[in-house]
Length: 428
Image (cartoon, helix red, strand yellow):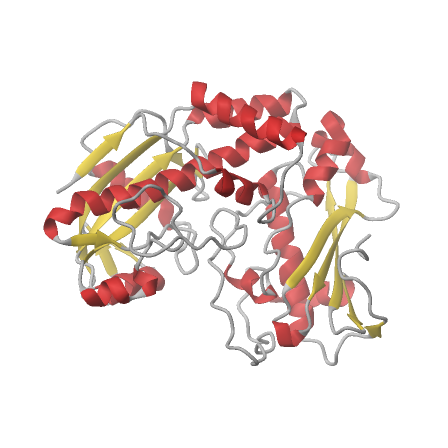
């Protein structure tokens, strides 16, 4: 049974992957300030980062309608199906972390009023975790080769179809069988979130290296994996659009000359249905443009996390492609509603207001993806009314996109048409 611990893994984060996570579009050349911030994050991590990787093998029982790893059951249908398709009879349990030092230093940067430095280091920590997981896949293939096995794509609690609450059970399983102390702290909060947050628990199936398995694209982890060099690569790397931690991979493109299906009226949302109905009627505005695109706006009303909970309002503007193109998100923007003053009393705004507003407006999720993808997007639950923390901002984007999806899927008629306009330049 394999078990390895690497307390000093190399982390040569690919520049293109780092830019992807920062939200820069492919081919975009960042300016001098962005280069300076990115280089600073790399330099700090090279000197002070403490990443580590642990993995061990586990027995698999997938015969009883549910998946059991070393006797512990996990009620995840996608994970069970993935192991079934690959006929995986063994698994590798993996824990990776960018280290507590990265999170601690990022927090100090924020407290010192350096939001740009904070953001670039936070994203670099995410890029390190992605690199460590990709490298672990290659390492597992290497270790399993003697038995004619290969790693199939990993799955983690919080991914579509696997409740993040299972993070605690998976952590206990990994820690229970660990015979070597980890070089850094790792804990699971009651919510299922990890601390340090730039960490990941994952399960890799180990499948026989058969011709059938090698030919099955969904069983080969190479296409979404940027790890290089890797002597086990079996397919070229095909990067997708920017994704947030836990965000699902994009769906395959529709066949040529075929329209995408309308948004499903019976979709399963993370938001309560009664709340969505109320928001669709009171907080969502839809407008069909002459070119077929749709302009949508969601009004979020919340309160600050300080100053006795002052009311605030933000507008989420989204431009969507025509229905035949799958309501693809063409542009998106978030900013304080006209006349709102509550945002100026958020604790993060008091530290550096203009930088916070730039951060809130930058990098909207699912850009270039169909609106339907919000239904499978796993994101942290951070229901506070302010926009101070990244998790809170991501949570609110989820609310806005689900409310817009519901309003469109349940509209009695097409939104009111308006003159054609450039879908990006018309955002306020």
